[in-house]
Image 1 (cartoon, helix red, strand yellow):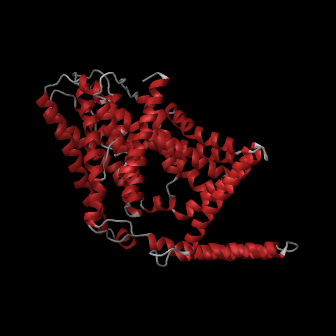
Image 2 (image 1 turned 90 degrees about the vertical axis):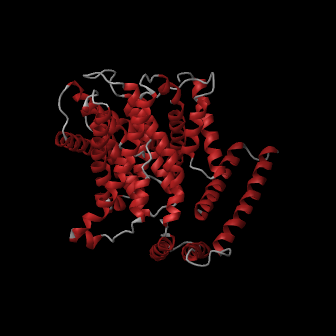
Image 3 (image 1 turned 90 degrees about the horizontal axis):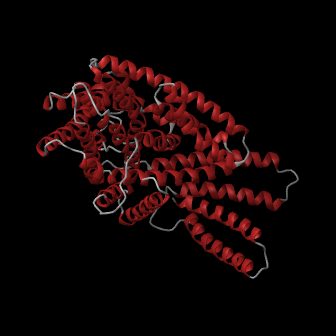
Length: 521
């Protein structure tokens, strides 16, 4: 779609679809995918063509970047071993397993092309994995592993796709050459990501205008991916490393105003991109289905075989990767043995997404010998639709059925209360050291504020069935703010205050009310 009208229509549909999903209690990507599939059959609806460059350079980098910004480095480092086993090991195994199965079914197709298809359908999607895992309320360990896998597996898959496409000229594709190329390109991505992150951090330290901070943050993932592509390194790894580095240091780099404003900007960007991406994936059905020349029987057989291989290989990998490594004493002592339900849920959370479709579009038109490119693109599309709808819709049920639910609320509240107590003592000490000459009522008001925050933290450990003092405070204060806001609006309408006064007062009230909302959440 190229016209402005078509873009506006896409945005409007994605917003309406997201609103419908929230009302129905579904995950927005699934609703938008179904909407796209349905709209692809509507006569006269504009056709959508998803350019690979648009996805890999224009859409994927900001989504990966914001996901990395929100990822905890300590948690990521703690679970790095299972993350790498999934993001590198499982992707390589899946690529060769699918490639072997497809080559056995289509012996005339070059093995390199079959491995390329395997790499295309191997990586679960970062957007769907994060959205569904958080919506389901899985344990933090599971969410961290799924997020870490989806942040890094695209790099492995895209490198394998490029090597396999290059090998279609007749050069043999081997496991160890591919592993070496993955390591080389990933290493270059790590270096570029670190250098770019350090440069961006220095810029943020010198910038005092929140708008300029937003501009630098928005430009960072695109600059990183362009530099990495020019250097022929992994742009995905570079963007992820830059996001992890900057996300860990944001509390020290940005002013409070910049952090609040940047959070709002990225939330809007992510909301719009995620919606448009899954809507576009669904809209591809008309174009992809119309290009297939292979017989229906062959198409169905190959598609079913690839879907089955993708799902089964993930399960076969998860259990040994979870339990066999615990024969190593160091790992056994450091990590407790999870119940079998945990790897089962992780194995089922293998939803594919837009990267799979974009990578499929990069396949060349001809191979040696020739192969049916449209068939491979359709298979990739079918894997996306099947995994998103079957696994995405049933993952909440499976997690509840197996008892894999978030169980860290009490532990989080206890840890927060303890740290809040320490923070309160530090704040009171700072108050005593700097209170000379300040009015007594101001000092007492600040002491009361610290006591209130400490009490709020401890309240979260108490009885949640009745209204706590902090909840009552929030409810009553919101009613007061609404009354204050109404008076200011009336005064503006009557000409007693200028628009600038209303804007300033409205901002102060909005900030306070948003803080109350965050406390409730």
